[in-house]
Image (cartoon, rainbow, N blue to C red):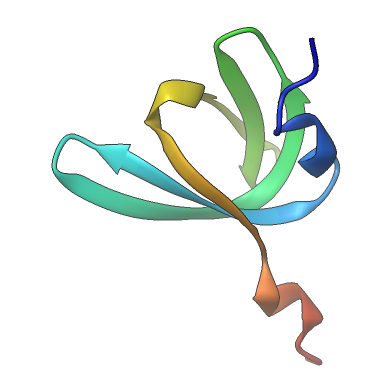
Length: 68
């Protein structure tokens, strides 16, 4: 069964993540869609697994589109 996260694999995104009562945006590149987690690269070589139950929203990273 495909999940909504599969469409975002390989793209730079911002995840809105709930940590208790706190909502935190995480910017990075989605690498893998697992059973209960997604793997995201949030820094150079720094990959983290995030529980899907904690993810409130996924959106395209608008900062990628800005010229440097």
